[in-house]
Amino acid sequence: KMIFFKYYLDISREEQKRRLEARHTDPLKQWKISSLDEKAQEKWEAYSKARDEMFVKTDFVYAPWHVVPTDEKKEARINVMQHFLSAVEYEGKDENKLLYDNDIVFPFSREALEKGKIFP
View 1 (cartoon, rainbow, N blue to C red):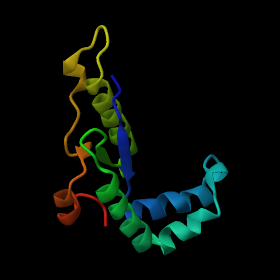
View 2: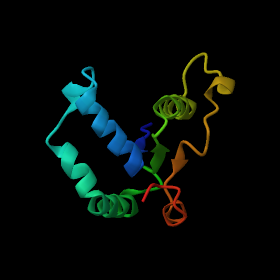
View 3: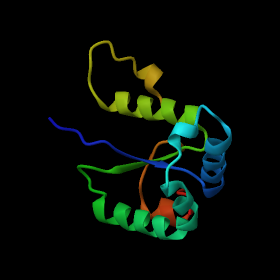
View 4: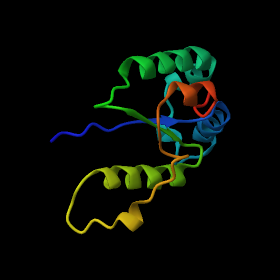
């Protein structure tokens, strides 16, 4: 049996800007600096449009997209792990420890896009 997991780690424009600025001021983050950093904010609308098209064209019943707002990194990471582990079978699985927040990991839908659940 094969299971596909596709997670889109969504970030708000404001949070992305804050993180990109931190790369220039925090010595521990400077290794992350890329020539693409500047373009990320400049081309926000174009990238968002391309992302939306990608969702529509590549979201399938057998391989759905899961959207994860990542402005809160720790919360996002924990919920992705819980989501992933809740979907696979393994010995000693404790369902009570794998309850993830449906507002943090949720399936892509046109409704989520239209209602602003996915960052514009």
